[in-house]
Image (cartoon, rainbow, N blue to C red; front, side):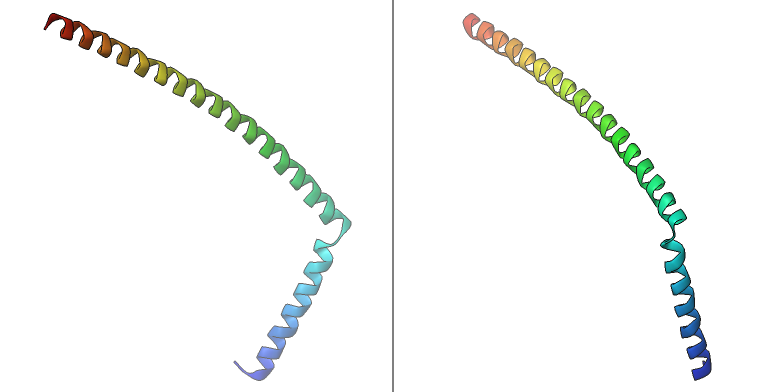
Length: 87
C-alpha cells in the first residue's frame, strides 16, 4: 500500500470516528441507550426473582434429603441394636 493510500485510510477513519462520536452523543441516541438500559435492568430483576425461586426449591430439596438420610440412619441403628440383642 502506498503512502497516499495509508494517509487516505487514516483520514477516512478519523472522519468516520468523529461522525460516530457525534451520532452516539446525540439526544436521540441517549434516549435509545436509556430505554435499552431500563429493559436490561427489568430483565435482571426478573432473573434475580427466578434465581431466588430456584434457590428456595433447592433448600427444600436439601432439607428433605437430610430428613430421609436421618430416617434411614435411625432404622439402621434400630436394626443393629435388635441384631445385637439377639446375639
